[in-house]
Length: 211
Image: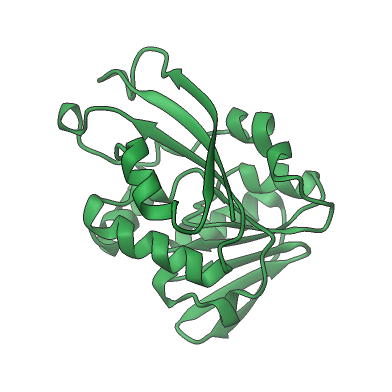
């Protein structure tokens, strides 16, 4: 799975993963991060998620990383914002009041380019990556954010039952990626009504990762 896979998804408007409102798990468990107004929260592989609008309504400064220019341009259009666009190394930065979106390969985004963040909200990044990319992603995220606290959403199911994304992430795998730097606290675990994509039984889980 390479960049062209996601570019084609957005070009073809094959974005069933995009929802029209904020994620209920974010609304329910955001307070677990205990952030103050004005805190800066990072959303990796953010697309044009409506979670961004919701977080800004809570007084958060949102930073995001996204590969697709289509997604970023549609995000700002739907927010009714005109971004200030600048170049930053291999990335383009789309900025508005309380919002910075880094357009390009997330692996080109480094700690100095991103700047300090107070927390991470990973709803659709880890589960979007195949197994061979997840180790590099998690280590890069830790280094880039200095192991900022995370609110993480994942799905756990029998991977052979359905191809991802979203990919299956077991508890063991999550611990393998993060336990050396974080304490992992499960906040939620319930079966997905009707199965994941209506195809196979799955559990949706929410975790608080604390350094």
